[in-house]
Length: 424
Image (cartoon, rainbow, N blue to C red; front, top):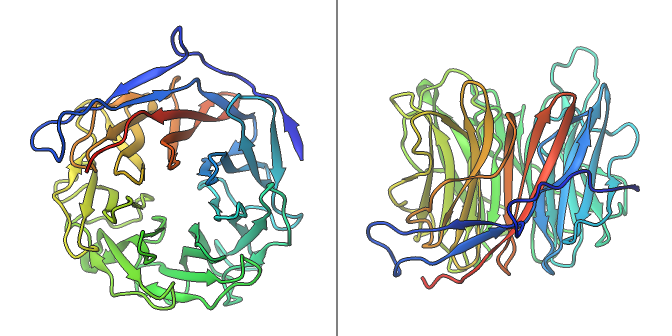
C-alpha cells in the first residue's frame, strides 16, 4: 500500500459549495422542481507524470466512496484502488495486479464493482505476448476484501486460450456472490470486428463461468454496459453494427441470472452510418420503480453529434422520445455517462469540446429523465475529459474525470448531495 496526501483542492466560493438548480419545462410528472445538487470542493486523487486512465467510482452500500484506475509509466503499468474519505484526509492507494499481469493500456478505465458485503471486484486487460499476435490481450478479474486488499491472484475471464483481443469490459456485482462481466471479444465475430461476450462467476469471483456470446456483430471498441433491474433481471446494452455499417444501440436481458439472454432489440433507430469504430459506448441504469434509462452518443443521418437519454417503463419493449442533453451550437458533446438514484433523479456528465479545449459538464433531472436542468461546468483548465458519475441511495453524488496540464496528469474527484426526494 502506498500512502499519499491530497495534492490539491480548489475551493469554490466562500462556502466551498456549488449549487446546480434543476428545473422542469413543459409537461412534467410533478410540480415545478426545487431540487438542488450541492457540490463540495474537488479533490485531486492522483497527480503524476505517468499516463492515467479515466477513473471508475463506486459506492459501498454504507456510503463510502471507492475509486479504481490505471497508471502506466512506459511499459510498466499498475491497476490501483483507493477508498476516498469524506474529509479529504490521507488516501491509501492499493496496487491490485501482481507482477507480470499488469494492464496493457490506459485508454479505458478498469472495471470495478462492489458487492453487498463490501467485496470489491476489479477487471482489466493484460497484453498477451504470443509472437505475431496483434492487439492480443487476456481479461483478468481480481477479488478484494471489504478493506480493499487482494485476497487471491486474479483469474482469467476469457476461457478460450486464444491470442486475440479480450477487452473493453464492464463488471457488476449481484446480490448473492455473483460477478457479471460483459466485454468485446475477437472470437465469434461476424464481419463487424468484435462480438459481445458475457460471463458470470457464482462464487464471489473465485472461478469464472462459461463464456456466452450475446452478439457477433458488435461495434469493436464501444464498451458494453450491464445493469441489474429491481426485479433481479440482468440487462446488457451495446452498440451493434448493422448491415451497411449502421451503428445503433441495442439491449438484451436475462431472467435466469445470465444463463441465457433475449434477442437484442434496438433502443433508437438513429441510422448512424460510420465505417469505423467511434469509441463511444452507451450508458444504462434503473430507478427503484423499474424504469430503464439508456444514454448514448449518435450522429444520426445528418452527421450531427448528439447525446440522448431515453426511458422505458415496459422492460425495453418501447422507449420514450429521446431527450437531447447537449444544446450548445459552439461546442461538440462526447463521452456521456449517467447515474440514476432509486427515486428517479438522473445525473448526466459528458465532455464539451471546442477547437482548443475540453471541459466536463453536468445536467440533472429530477423528474425521472423527462427534463433536465441547466448545464453546469465542473472542470477547470483547458483539457478535462472522460467523466464518470456514481450515486448512493442516500443521495450522495460522486463525479470523476481526468485533467492534463503538462507535465502532469490528474484524476479529479468531486462529491455532492442531491437535496430532495422526487415524487414520481
